[in-house]
Image (cartoon, rainbow, N blue to C red; front, side, top):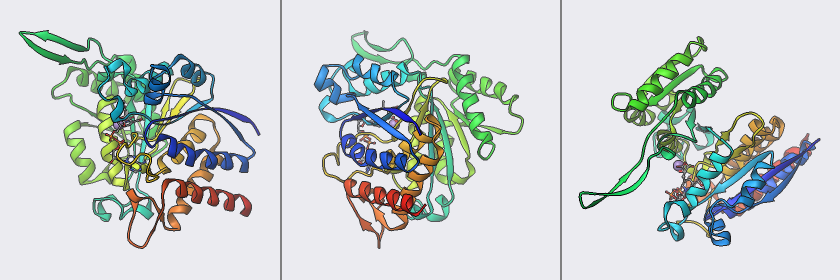
Length: 365
Ligand code: NAD
Ligand code: IPM
Ligand code: MN
């Protein structure tokens, strides 16, 4: 038995609601395995701007760096949308990722059999889909310099720079090949090398790294085609590796295969010894915030990824995932995944239901 220090960043919008639903579930799953979690909450995003004027205050950075893992809900909201870039909630999240060097963002999109009819796509298209998107998270156009606004010939110009260094491409490629080796041994590298130099380098480096992984079948696809193929035949994909912005877009797209963005967890892994960040793929959902409508399962599943990949607690992760499956099997659904014949519940109640299944399963063993 051990104690694990978790930095909890509940953020904005639905963040506090899904966090409140997730923490008791995590605590109880840990208890069942004799593991204890110590939560230290810290502000990030809009909540941190309101409290301190900074979306990623130094005090929050200290809490994160002193923890074994960071569990994040989501940030952002209309209230802060017209602030300059440096003071936006999103900047807080980007600085968090950067400060922990969380370069490898793993975003699994798995179609659970219970939810095969919850997708807007046909059951026969999505059923059995099991994709892992490996997204580079601390480089590319999100961080490239120069960037900004300028005045040219009497009009305003906005500009960004998409840049990748060989070393950045190589390290994310290795994470993706390693992940593919543990899965279906198929890796699809997604870029835009028919147009962009940065993508030509990406393709070259990924191809070079492939020599170290002879068992993995590597393919290359342009981002526009990949966006189409993902909807046409998602089962053709196993592991995908791509840059920061393409991975952002493809992962939201992939969420609709699974039924809802409210189901997708993620893990952002750093170099060994540094804490990873575990967070749902979705944002703060301002359209449903404060209404007890949010699906907390993406965050519960993110906590499971934290246990599995960040804390080496596979048994706790198994319990969390089994309880989510049990809640779905029993017919409980939040609005975003509601289907005929199911019981619609709010965020809080979904949390309680999952907690009950954790307790039941612990009692049964
Ligand atoms: P969003 O992901 O917040 O919401 C998109 C749609 O999905 C909305 O209709 C929302 O209601 C729904 N949705 C999302 N999560 C859900 C859940 N758990 N349960 C049920 N429905 C859910 O994206 P957006 O509306 O484009 O952005 C809102 C804010 O969130 C913006 O400020 C954006 O910058 C921020 N954002 C933050 C993160 C993050 O914290 N990692 C990710 C994406 C967007
Ligand atoms: C995500 C979000 C973030 C991103 C934003 C809020 C900075 O969309 O985590 O997918 O683009 O990475
Ligand atoms: Mn996104």
